[in-house]
Length: 152
Image (cartoon, rainbow, N blue to C red; front, side, top):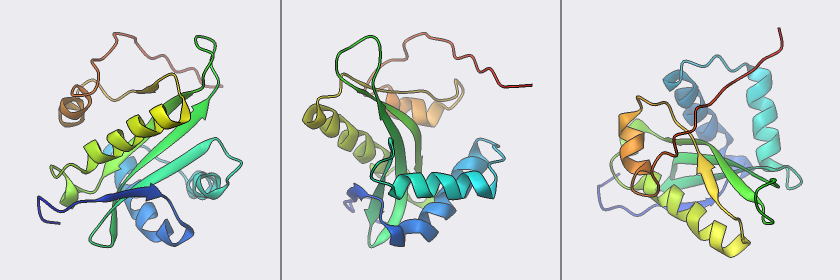
């Protein structure tokens, strides 16, 4: 993808599954996450389900899906409008540094305005310097610390 090549941001389609699965695997590998086939299949099914709160937009450049953003729009207790949690954002290594991640975030910012969401929020690893350079262009980290509790 040339550095000036535009990308199209759009909802994921059933035909995107092979490309999405390849990107999803690379994303899971990046985070050293062992996400099983059952979870992957369920995630894809929810992405395509119009009644699911999970949505996925993809970035397409030169006819290829080169990135995605997974989001969950949900009610919350701090505002009267829903909020959007950007759960996963990933861009293929070959498309990085070309504005694809920014295009995905801009799409979400525009959706926030159009849909009336109170905010879009996300998190990343503290040492993910590359992603944080992009994210800091939109908002500074808010200082919250994440805790995760799992069943024993």
